[in-house]
Amino acid sequence: MPLTLYYLTDGPPSVACRMLLKAMKIDCNLVKMDFLKGDHLTEEYAKKNPQKEIPVLDDDGFYLSERNKYVPTGAGLFKYKCFSTAILQYLADKYGKNDTFYPKDIKARAIVNHRLAFSATKYYRYIEDYLLPLFYDYERTELMLKKVHVALAVFNTYLERLGTKYSAGDNLTIADLQFVSGTMCLDATDFDFSKYSHVTKWYNTFKNENPELWKIVEEAKEILVMVAKEEPDLSGLYPHPVHPIRLVNA
Image (tube, rainbow, N blue to C red; front, side):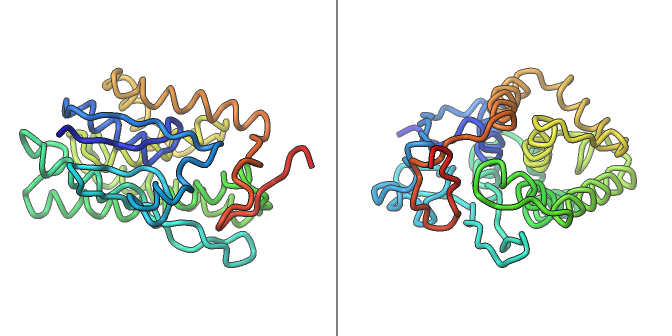
């Protein structure tokens, strides 16, 4: 049976997975989830992912996901959450015709793993913390903004020190797919990160050299642009098991 990916069009973890599927030419059945209707909050979906989060990969009954829920801890801070790292690693290991996207050389893989960990625990985490008030009833704080700049500055330094075209070397890896998906969120909301010159150059290089993958990113970006302009009505998700829902028409 072919793979099945339960995905969200504008969800960065889903975007990263779809890009890898496209890049590696992996046959996969794509099941689009209706986020506003709460497809991911059903008990049936929980059988695939008890976290009730998106995405989920189904490889002939083997379910894989890695996206922890936000748990508010006060002062606009949120508990650690992961990206779709496990799915990306699994696809690259099982279906890769070579090790370009996820190198087998110990040191080269260590750099990719480091970048994946940095993205999950700092870069994407801080970006999504900052953007979460667009969707849910949280207050955006100066600390959230500060953390985004910290993440960008650190990523900029990594790119500068390594001195390669992409985040973990001169070849595109699964780490870049995570970073691009997160950076796209800033791009979609007109967040100016131009002063981080190495991040800007890396982002533009990806866009220019990977047009087919960029189409997937651009599709997600267009949705987020609309979300940023007007608050989405998430009343269909009320009561949410974790997030406070902003009742637009209340």
